[in-house]
Length: 376
Ligand code: SF4
Image (cartoon, rainbow, N blue to C red; front, side):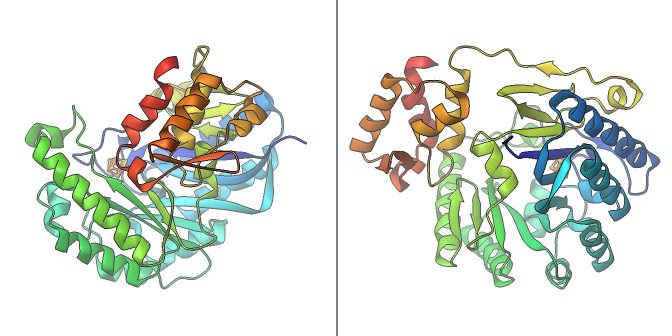
C-alpha cells in the first residue's frame, strides 16, 4: 500500500513585512485579485503533482505562509476540492490554516471551518504592545478580545503561536502572555525563541550578544516549565499539546514522511527526493510549467536529516525506522555516538529508540553535531 502524504499549500503573501521576518513574501491586502490568481495556479500545481507522483492519498493539508488567512473560505474550499479530485483526500484528514490576529472575526473563522478547515493556528506571538513594537510585527497586536472571538467558534482545534526571548522581555510579562493564552485551553501551543537574523530590519537596530543569549535561555526554560505545569505535553522542541492534539502534518516533517509542497519556495519530500520551486510569485504566476529544483543528495544526507529532525521529537527516533523508511543502513559509528550520549545522560534509550533528555535539550545543537560529527 502506498504511504499517505501531506500537502502543504504555501501562501507567500502578507499585509507587510515584519521586522524580524526572513521569509519570502509579497505585500498584498485582503481581496486583492492576485490571491484568486494564485489559488488558480496552486490548483494547477496540485494537478501537476498528481501527474508527477500519481494519485496519492492525502491525510493532512496545511495552509501556511505568509498569511493564509488573507484567503477567504471560498478560496480554501476551491483548493481542497481540487485536492480531492487530483489526489484522494482521506475523510478525517487534518486540515490546518495559519491565521493572523488581524483576520480574527467569527465570520472568517466560520467560513474557513465551513470550507473544511479543522485546525487553525493563530499567530499571537505576544499580547504585549511594547514587545509587539520591539519586534516590528505588522498589523495590530493580538488582544484578549481577539482570543475570546477565536475561542467562541466551535468545530476546530485551536492552536496558538507564541514568541519568547524578545529583547527587553521580562519573565513576568511573558508569564502574563502565557497565563492569558493557557486560560483559554488551546489544544496546541507552538513556542518559538526569537531569532534575530542578519539582513532583517530588527537586526539593524538590535544585535544579540552573550547577555541576550542568557536571557533568552532563561525565558525559554521558564516557558517550557510553565506550559508543562499547565498540563501541556512537550512533544517536539517547540511544540506542546493537550493529549491527542499533536500536529499530524508537522509530524511528517519530523518523522521523515512524504509531503508535497505547493507554491513558490515551498519544499517537497517525495520518494526520498527533496525539491522546490524558486521563491518568486511573479515567475509562478506567469510560468506555464513548474520548473522544480531537485536537491543533490550526498551519501549521508538522508541519515543527517533523519537524525536532525528525529531528535527534535521528544519520543525520539530509532535506527530501525531509518532502515524501514529509506532502505539504508544506520552506521555503527553513529549508533556508538548515540550510546555514548546515553551514558553521559544527554539521551535516553528505550525499546530501540533514542530520545533527548532535559539535560540534552539544553545543548540540542551541540548534541546533534556530536552525534553526526563523523559523517558531516
Ligand atoms: S506575518 Fe509572518 S510571514 Fe508575514 S512578514 Fe510577518 S512574520 Fe513574516
